[in-house]
Length: 276
Image 1 (tube, rainbow, N blue to C red):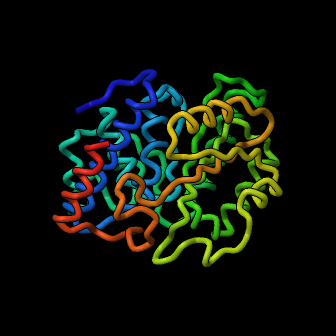
Image 2: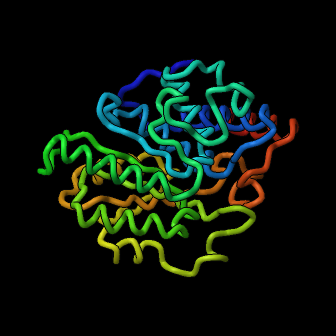
């Protein structure tokens, strides 16, 4: 099913996000590889971005810096009509347009090739500067924007902090970073590896920081709208989420960062998502 664009209720967006989660799980299961925790935790975000008139798809850009989240990007591109839904079964197959990390020029709707963490943040920052140079530096609510999605493990890359410095110095208020803080990275909880207060550190770098519950549709929508009204600074939305959100036996478990469900686990997960 292709979903139409336009304002939707929180309940409609929740159901749509769960449809995207089902797509992700089926893709990873069929491929026998791929990531689960991040794509599931960020499904609500992608449902709101693409289906609730947050984006102007004719001029705004979405950069997925954490490229391993690509199953959720492919799912939303398919459900919005950029790809065939049937094409999702080709995820990570030889010759497919849906590789294990996104590639610009290969997949319709993919703006940036992303593999090594952090690079997409720098590219998104450059894109926002380019928009300012083309369209004027003065703030306008209707100016083109760049939305850059990154993961909390990605903050361990020095490159992202250099990009934040540049974005603040350049007053890129057409740039909205969205941090999926699900607390999970490969085989670990992020808190066991990093002891710093992320929000305070981001504020210290000069970003306008907003915090929200990223699996609460209404909270997320309000936060995105507030971010669009910030003037003179790039915004960082710290989106608190649950890793593998929506599937109770997967939630908040580092093993599901990139674990492939077996057929029994897949069926249980799909049933649970369909019941919500």
